[in-house]
Image (cartoon, rainbow, N blue to C red):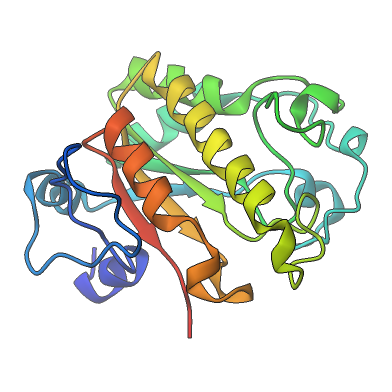
Length: 225
């Protein structure tokens, strides 16, 4: 893969070497050189980005979080076919969009009803992909949108930040717990951070949580400009 394209995909990789004994980080800083897990990620190079969700059924890239969960109703979810295709194409990893800006979750989250558990197909897509990744020897990364137009629709109201930030951290714990049953998560791509000031996102807490549960996982944050 062209290294310029690769650098774009991994917009901001944070240090893979984290000590639990450190004090709480309020603003993680990019590392100056690759750590051991970052080097492993760089060597993987070629991977698949899987963007599939409720928007698929409206032929839109983004929706606003108001589409009913029941409208997500694939005839089948064949994660085995997705991952075997990645393997056959020579790919080393996949990144699954688990929640886009619409807020719809591709796993049955206990923190919201806006998920596959309330939809037309209750398949836990995150679990299905993790299981297939183990089967075919493919590494798994996940994409998680910070901006959530369903759960945090009034994004300008900072008084809601504490509740929503706790919601995000809890969901990331769920996602890592699901993948940990089958494989080791290698990347968490956090997107859509531009709708709030950086200080309003709990990136330090997310980073600490990830490194406690999956030290090998690289954390990328797309702040945009």
